[in-house]
Length: 607
Figure 1 (cartoon, helix red, strand yellow):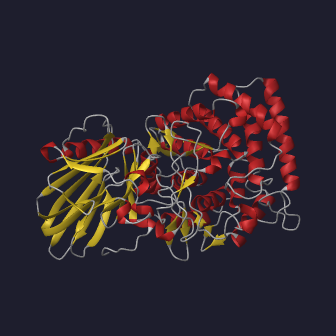
Figure 2: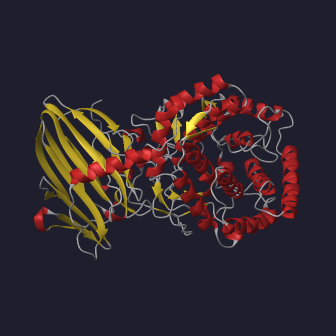
């Protein structure tokens, strides 16, 4: 493939250091980087605008064929440019464990000679603040604006031109040039340069060691390992939180306004993520995520949110960025997420399910978890019958969403089955679970089709109904669930992929149209496996694996007609779903895989 100016989301790859992450395009341009952490202000924001909003490109001057890959088991990206005069690689990574986040770029001559151009455009605060750039000692370039400082060192000197730093240089076979860009607080001394070659070796060693702990998933092992590495790259090491994506406002419809900030931690991801880490053998990550969860929800149960910041922050105020035109003209660009203030009853069930899975997976119970659970069960008992905004965070009128009621049932059902609670409490919660179950089966069924619907009294379908079998609401072979899957196949499938729901402004307050939601498509494969339709499950899973970009990453959504990614990228929910479906197939096919050094069947959300 030759270099192109028209960007697509799938043209990017992610590098990260478990504090923040950057997106690197096939054209050698780093177009997105937030500092000092995932949810900080972007100093490279060209992803949502133009080069003048911040980027860092290193690429051949001449047309080039581009191939790229992650070095085995790592987040070290190797992009290979092949021109008529020679071949050069640009190796990009973020060192792990250093006091400040850095991006290292090593340009390696592979054959012949290649003339390259480097352009560094630094803009803080999502592309609007131009820093003061100066030349320091030993050729270190520094850029300062307010609290932020960036220091660039390298073997090729940069010069200023039109509020940018540029360089032209040639690399011959066997030659290597390195660039290191490091962030630090502006009131402290400039971060000291470090050895780029040694940092590369240490970073590769870290990732290989971490990826080597992944359990065997047979034929799916490579895809599962890449997804788990991605999830690790989306984790905030200091707290154990995992961001839904490292990006903000990548559109769910090109040119549309469904553009949201996903750089936060959703409670809804809790059980899915725990399941993925436990099955793959990553108990430390599962433990850290469980503990983050308990800290985040601690406090008054009526103040529980659906999402939190990386350390459990609760204020995620949403605002629009008027100076950024948006990816492919998709405006507005939103920072922060107002959905944090919505009532979404399903998160109570997700937390309960996560804690139950943690116990089933062998993580030790904590007294604080029992106390927190008891307090919010009492609160949920008072509010479960209310309408809410639902799993998809609709910004229309609250409704009695079926999935929300089912997850309320999950909260009380898991409490009734919990050995950590007293028998009297377990009996009480069991009675309430049975009451909710009866109501759902009475009010959430289409009287003509015999299948479940999106909300009480509605005729619409919703892909979240695929979770009913996964959480054990009814047996997979129940006729009502089989009819629900059949209805979803008829009405929500586009080229074999699943839409979240039938969009309408009256439902979510937004214009119609979005892509197929990839996690929902994995859920359909899960349902096929649970129902014994193993060939259908394998066929759909292989189709979904085929959607991964050239370095194995998935976005939130996919446009089957335009054949392109949509939504924030890479998306943790999609990669968690990939991992869980792979283990679900192993389970459904009756294989006992060697996972985490011992023989056992994969853990399921419900047995």
